[in-house]
Amino acid sequence: MDRTPRVFIVKIIRSKDFVASKAWGALDIANMRGITTRLHWADQPYKWHVNDGEEVFAVLDGRVRMLYREHGLEKSVTLETGDVFYASVGTEHVAHPIGEARILVIETAGSV
Image (cartoon, rainbow, N blue to C red; front, side, top):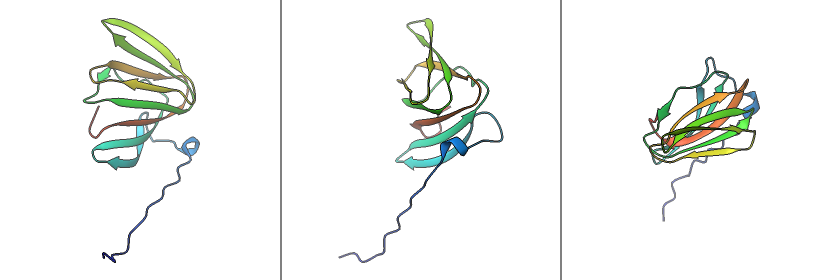
């Protein structure tokens, strides 16, 4: 029987208190087998991009106008606090915060 003491790590993050030094600055929360969970702070648009894998984008605080392309057509949706946006592989998209926003992003490590 393995009697090696186990180390448990707990993080409590108050997302509303997080502010980065620049737009889209991030706090790394976890890396689970190559999938990262990061808290981003933003007050400026990101850039049009396509992720290397799937992406889950959850607005924890604020509002974000998400633009995306589907079948060659540009669409948009305003995400409110508590809303989640899922982008499958190959989905071109860009986030435009409306004021300050805090966003939880779960994606493959190293994605754009």
